[in-house]
Image (cartoon, rainbow, N blue to C red; front, side, top):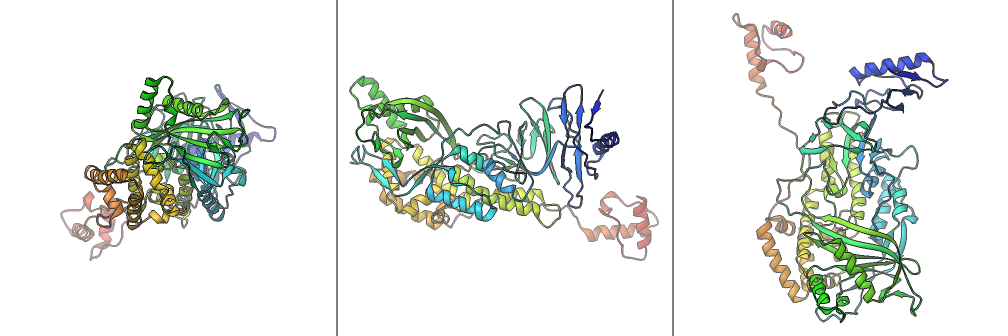
Length: 635
């Protein structure tokens, strides 16, 4: 039994009309409907409020708005619920997830499209600390402001350092205490301010649904549970679920999956040979240190407060005489599976430390990273008096790209956009959001005719992974594999040589994404070949020989990916661009002839199915054209 409770301002006739419209809507959701005032419906299970949403049809000629009476969640399980004929929400683009990649692409898309962002944990703060190069961040700010009128305010930067320091001492005659200073400014992002800057501020930006998808891809564009996600030529229907286990049905033209590296909605490409991902693991702590007995307060230990320390690969903190056997074992392990300290001095005696395993397969233990972090700090005489927050960083790097021809568009970690050699991802995601948003807006706005959504999705993938971008990525994947096999000596020699390159070369490699500063130094096969040859010349001979040998063995084992990235001879990787499917048209002239001859025949008067016209009957040449049309009409 259902009781209708209306506001005093709502006439009873309007409520009855609303019920009738909803019943009609069940049979044909492409009807035009009336907008009603907000009404409350009381059922035996719960009380819900109606909402006015866009009609769930993407016919551009239908401009009426539709009021849906939204009932409580169905008692049926996801496995048994059929797709509804009316929907709780409709939009142009549904973005799944609420991390930086999701909010960035949703913010840019919503400048021109109706966008919903769905995540049960939308209001949860982002856990990681983000560090970026100054010039990369400013390039992103310029893109967002100039192309999308979206401002990233100054308060998104928590701290700026004018220089960046590294320590590679302990190998190749580099003194342990020697500092390698880089004249390139670095930023620490205020993650709370950035999260706010990429959140809706008014009704003109994306909407929020606190629900997650329940689907898992089992083949290209097929999902389990059945009916939980269905595509058609006009869009997609997806079932979401709130924390309260209530279902929300959303109708969208396009779905973007920004749920992270281990997405369940997007399949990886099994047709192209690829290497499993490596993993960056880090333990971080925002701490307050005791400076009571410190004379020089311009530093915390060896770390200059006016510099960001990007790498400290020293292992002298395992050289203490106490507990010699244990130290020796820890040293051997640290040399074989290296970690480095990453330090961001903040204000006064607050500093963020992070002990990081750059990339490994399998991943290094978080406990090892934590133990090494505090052992290093103790050795450096840094006394921690308070831990404000801890961070456990887990970043898959490399691995296969998404499979082609998928209607759901993966973005961010779900599309393997993390730099395969370094783990950098924030600037790559935010810059990539611009290119992807542009092609989606162009594809969905179009010329007023219904868009080819398979083509729109393919163009979005192409904006991320053009053949040129894939070749550049393949070069970086080799870099990640080479770093993975290095001990601490090899990594010290590698990075000491790397940062001795001209800044535009090494910074372009670290960027590795179109639009970021100096990426143009790596966008062609010749540019990458030049970089590689120049880089080898800067390496210690031992590391250089290892790299040359690795290039040969990697190319033999893994195929053409690396040679294709540095030569013009092996063609391009397969494209994500949309390919028109061949039409099963047959021989039109032969079928027309058969229809004409049958119409003239005194024996046959039924036209076989293969000879029928697919559309309304048109003129058939010959003296009996009229009779042939009559025969077809009868059929």
